[in-house]
Structures are given as C-alpha cells and as structure tokens.
Image (cartoon, rainbow, N blue to C red; front, top):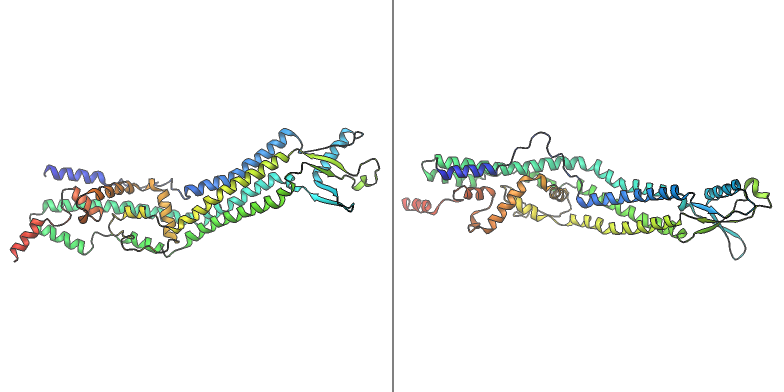
Length: 392
C-alpha cells in the first residue's frame, strides 16, 4: 500500500462522524431562543411584580389608612380600616347632591391579577409543549440522525471507491463503473429528501406555532384593555371617601357619614401598571418577528446540506410557500445546530469548494472527498483520449 493511499485512508477515517447511540440528544431544544425569552419574560415578570406587591404589604402594614374621628378608640379605628378595605368604594357627590360610588377593587386584587396574568401567558407555552413538541422532537431526532448518517455514507462510499481503485488493475474498468454509478444515481439516498418534501405538505406544526404567537398577541391586547379600563381609572386617586354607616351603625348619630382614607399601596399599583405596559409593549415586536420568520426560508442551512447526495431542495427549486412544517423544522434545526455534527464539516467543505479551481467538477461531498483522497472527480483526460485513440 502506497503512502498516499494510507494518508487518504487516515484522512477519510478522521472525517467520519462518531456513532451516537444510546441516550443521545438529551439537550434537544424544542423552543426557539426568542420564544424562550418571551416565555420567561411574559410569565416571570408578573410573578416578580406579585412578590413585590406582597412584600410591600408585609413590610409597610395595611395597604389603607383611614382618618377616623378623634373620639374613636383604637379598636374602632381598626374596624374602620378593615371595613373600608373590604368595601373599597369611593363616595362622592355630584352637582345635584346625589352620592355616586366608584369601586377601587383593582387595588385589592392586584397580586391575584398578576398571578392570573402569569397563568394566562403560560397557556400558549402549554399548548406548544403538548400539541407540537412531541411530534417536533421525533422529527428532529430522525432528521438529525439521517443528516449525519448521509454524511457518513458519503465518506464510506469514498473509502470504498479508494479501495476499489487501488485493487483495480485496469483504470478503464474503474472509471466506467464509476460513471455508470453516477448516471444511475447509485450514490443518492433519497429517503430524507422525500421525507422533507412531505413535510412541505404538512401544516400541523406551523398551525400550532402560529396559534401560540397569536394567543400571545391576543393576551397582550387584553392586558392593554385591562390596564386602560380599570387601572387608569384609579391610577391617580390616592384618597377616597368611605362610608361605614351600614348595618347596625346606620342609625348611629356620632358616626360620620363619610371617612377619608388614604391608599398606601398606590405607588405599587402605579409601578405595576407602567412596568407591565412597558415590558409587554417591548415584547410585541419580538412576537411579530417570530411570526415573520415563517415567511422566508433558511436557505443558508439548506445550501450547506446541498453537498449531500440527493439533497437538492434548492437546486431543484422544490421550495414553495414557506408557511409549512418544513420551515418550522428548519428553524429548530438551526436552534439545534450544535447537535448537527455534520454541519461543521459540510460548512468547511462548502468554503473549500468555493475556493477550489475545479468547481465545475464538484457537486457533492462525494466529489470533494474523492478529490481530497487523490482521485479525480471525473475520468482523467489521458484515459479519455486513449479510449478515443483505440476506437477511432
């Protein structure tokens, strides 16, 4: 065996990817990075504000302080505070002298409304995890495995070609068989390409992804309506008039009709309202951007894998409307690029292919690795001329 053939075999052996059997791909990402960021902010931020509201209540005491008459005892003043907090209704006179009431209930339900907001914003995440993640996981496992296997098959094919060329006594026979194999497309393994082509006609994943982001936009719009309709009405009202002349106290003459109370938790409501409005407004462009990514193909990822035999979705112009499951899978393949060991090898080969002087002879990784192993991608010209001379 010559030194050149030995070096070529070592080079091809190093180019083979390791066999990943057993517990593999445990860290498979089933959420895109931006979707994960939106989830953490949309769900975690209300929980943070809820803890802030409870911390303020425990540290500063009651969220309300009423100015009871001076003749009230401490127990009577505490009763006034509790009664006004339970009712939380503001009484005011109109121009006709009639009393109007306005409820200030957003102060009372503030921590619980934040908890409800966190639960509601988590519903799209649950929808994705249970409706799409299992099918997406199986698709990614199969596609990643097949992409790496297809790369390995190409390398093993070059190794086999190298052995046949070394054992062949007549180079004409070898090149005739090689050209016949290429003409009959023996080097192609179309299972993966056909599977991906089928995914272009499937829309379950993309429908779930669109529904997830649409629900996020819908719930964000509901937050705007809630803040604008309920919080804005009590946003600047720090004091209110409370009536405790109800029940047994209704006929008591020494009890004033209205008692002024002050909301000590107003600053917390203002912080919650402004910060929620700001954060969810910033999330809207991110959600819209996630939706717009479904309107274009990740052609860079596809162009790299065009080096594999029978993976010519781009060159055959097989890509149609990008709103289908295949585009969603490509987005998640990009997010799981660390699991695609063949991607780094093929990226290097693509760069080398673009810089080689024989671009017209190199279409796939088989052609390029054949050239690196010391074989011509096509029949050498001197053999072609010799055949022409022998058969004038």
